[in-house]
Length: 263
Length: 317
Ligand SMILES: Cc1cc2nc3c(=O)[nH]c(=O)nc-3n(C[C@H](O)[C@H](O)[C@H](O)COP(=O)(O)OP(=O)(O)OC[C@H]3O[C@@H](n4cnc5c(N)ncnc54)[C@H](O)[C@@H]3O)c2cc1C
Image (cartoon, rainbow over all chains, first blue to last red; front, top):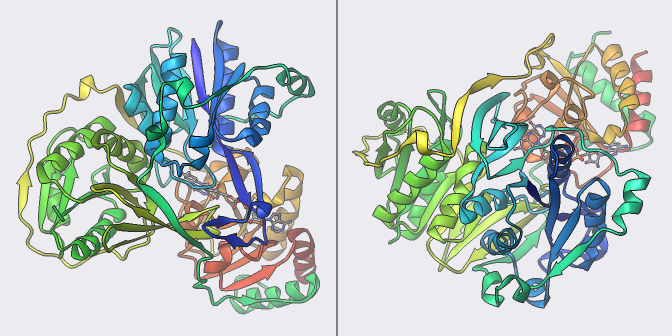
């Protein structure tokens, strides 16, 4: 069996950041493996430890810098990685449809039996690529999965979909499928020193559009970001300034005044 | 072609709040476009739902009688079929967990651009959507240069429409064989019951990822003890297994309405805020002055919890 895990390197904004044009200035961004994808990687690696002959391949759309993140996934047990990038991809404003076309081409190349992806990416929070991809490649799917069991012949997955308000939906999904993974599904492992060493020699194959049988049209997007700004704060919060003990004294006074602490 | 189609959300026999908000979002957009608002109600007791959703501003309701509960193949298929029949300029779906499970498929099948999790919409020569990025630290505007377009709408951003009206209801025929669907719902399960119901607490001391390590939870336990507060948390604390699921506040956890909610080391992600914005007084302690939690807080301390919390404990010892 082959499991494809989509892995994104996401940016996080520093506490004090500045917006430059339609994005946060590069110097204020820090990059990391998307939290939700970390759980998807763990789920794939656990399946590879449960069953014989499972290969786990990760797929990333991202610049060379993202190889650092990819190495993290490799160090955690992903067997090999694919990175999709070229000048046309770099120049594009990738929307869900464009990402779907790129990943669908990877799926055609790799023919996985199962695709795992994170529910959403922490930076842009679209939460749509996994299901869109499933629909495009004709796989079944389930979104927001926080519990996963597979039949031993790998024909079927029993999943829980985490709905709002502490309710889970119990669903059976035929495989092959795309599952979008919610945090809490498992406990993502830390990369071991041995894993990190081994990851250095694992393959990261680089694919451009042409390698995937696509051209620049595949990444053309009708959606463009035209503005970014810090939201006007609706808050009229009262701030407690000073040293920690002064702040604490003011806070304590509020708590006493609200009558929630006795004394 | 200037109409809007919106798809209602319901679960276990009840129309979900976001449906009433979708009607507002859809009506506003239809007004900008100069068109009609059509509402789709799919699965379950559709006649009763149509009755509930006969709201001011809706021009027509289309019911699709098939199956009891949400099934993404049914929702995607029926929405696409209705879309093809009505030819709207925009289809609006909720950015709910079920929305996440079918809206991207709708956009893909129709081959239309998808804007997810919109918090505001405007139309002037083309759709302009507002969304958040980087954990709600910034807002962005997106322009969509093609029509029609699919949009998912964040809950809680548009005021619910409550005023009722007499809306014509049309039964839309859509053949659906649930047994042929690749995903079959087997049932539901409630999670998070336990010894304490944080929904009853008057004073919640709530901790987030700012606590860093499980050992450090002791500090918060001590604070809860000296103040007589109940402890709750954001999701990562529960995901890490440091607190049980019944302590999680938020969209997928519990909704709480205490007199005071003290959020410590919690950024204020939308799914967290969904569970606690009903608190009477919200107090936040966070090192990041731009953390979105301060936008809804009544009192704020920009500071390190490892300095502030011990000092606060001293105040009550
Ligand atoms: C479908 C779905 C459902 C979800 N449901 C929920 C839910 O029910 N509940 C929920 O909480 N989340 C939920 N989430 C997750 C949510 O998106 C966030 O990931 C989560 O709320 C973040 O938790 P946090 O604020 O504790 O962590 P972070 O966002 O990492 O924030 C930690 C904060 O701590 C601050 N901090 C760090 N160190 C210190 C210090 N020493 N002193 C003071 N402050 C410090 C940081 O500045 C930061 O603001 C859901 C997500 C999805 C996709």
